[in-house]
Image (cartoon, rainbow, N blue to C red; front, side):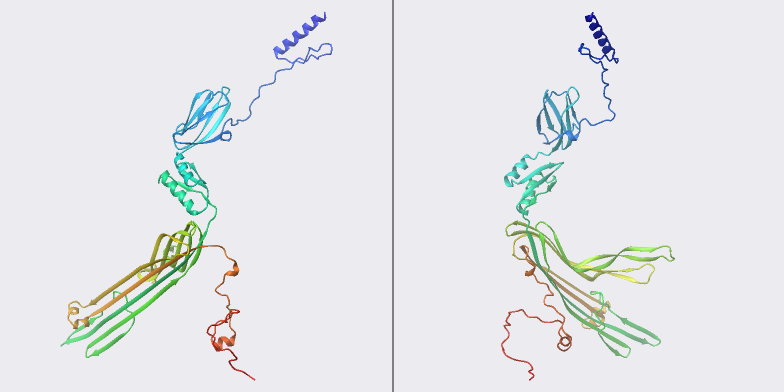
Length: 488
């Protein structure tokens, strides 16, 4: 009877389980085989989309064009996804081995999946130029330099002892990779030297101008007819007369004016800049000024007539220095120097008439002398860039046609203008490898300067007090004793 009850209870539980219904049949100590029958749990429903495979789960692989890498996978491969087959290709040779082949320069990624669609592996592939040959050459010459491909270019990294080695690695990479390859030099220099450049720029300009001319004014009468004769000759070589220096003679109805002037001048320009820069960097120095030049007009059209004002830009002139030093080895410096000396000139000046005004604006020209060179020089050695000579001679004769060709008397009907200009520029360059110094070892131009007292300034004409250096003996002092005015 009990056996039948147990069979009936089991059958009911099985039917309930098969029907998927809810049936609770408490177990007892006498019948432990009877347990709770619960419904199966519902299947999970995804509420949002998520990334199953991406760059975050990928490993990076760098390949050269035409190069391959072998991948061993932990499970059997069912599916392969290549983002851009034009960049790289994946070939599956067995269930757990694949080959990645670089085709063209670029970036792509590859994913491997198993039978259930789960990701086995993912790789972010960067295809660059084949740099094995360049890498081997750089490793032999400079073992601390690292070369990597970035897109269609290459990047140098690592560290070297001097800028010369950095430049050597850059030149070697450009030569081996090709001139059309972009090379980025990101090499760190462990000890960067500082270079001070001492430059002397000296220029001498000599001008000689001679002007000689005769102006004739006469009145000749024939009965009731009068003929007026006027001959005034201009000095067109220089552009204007030097001054009003003339001698006038009057005889009857003839007036003769002799205009003669001669000018000789010397212009001396001297600049001695000292400037320092880190090896491989560029330093610039300029001593001069700026002058305004018109760059356009700004007009107020609300007025009648319109009122216009010129817009002003400033142009630099003076002595400028631009240099880039590179310390090659201990004591030797590769130096790129650009020196320019410019000043204002009235030659080829331009005169502009302001619109709506009777005023004019004269814009001067700039006369420029420039020297640009690259050289290698030891520290403390001097370089002289000399021989930059320029000589300009202009001579012009104006006069009355026909009469000015007469021998001797032709000088009365003509004027002569002669201009000779000579310019010589010399640049002395001396580089030094320098180190930092203590402030106490430096001096200022105003050291020892002090305003004089009123009696010293008024009676003795002194502009500043004079101080001596303690412990210094004047070599010109030959008298020792009391001197001056002694009041008892």
